[in-house]
Length: 69
Image 1 (cartoon, rainbow, N blue to C red):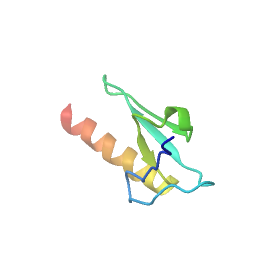
Image 2 (tube, rainbow, N blue to C red; image 1 turned 30 degrees about the vertical axis):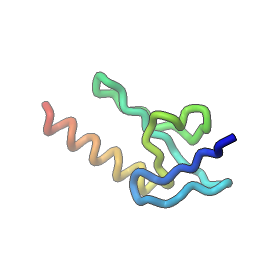
Image 3 (cartoon, rainbow, N blue to C red; image 1 turned 90 degrees about the vertical axis):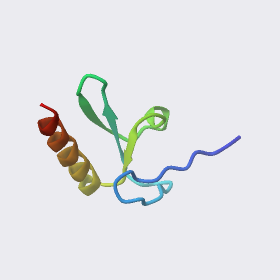
Image 4 (tube, rainbow, N blue to C red; image 1 turned 180 degrees about the horizontal axis):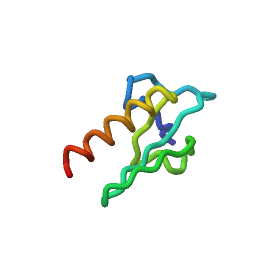
């Protein structure tokens, strides 16, 4: 059985066993949802290791939404 390893999409930190990470789900119609880490939902999401990386990701996402409108 292969064990999944994850790296933060913000800073590249590798996920450890007891980290408090987040998942960012970007919807196809311009929605964004940030959730606490859940291994079952980690497959097709952005992986973020801290509130700092979440903040940077959301800021980048919002800026991109403004540029697209």
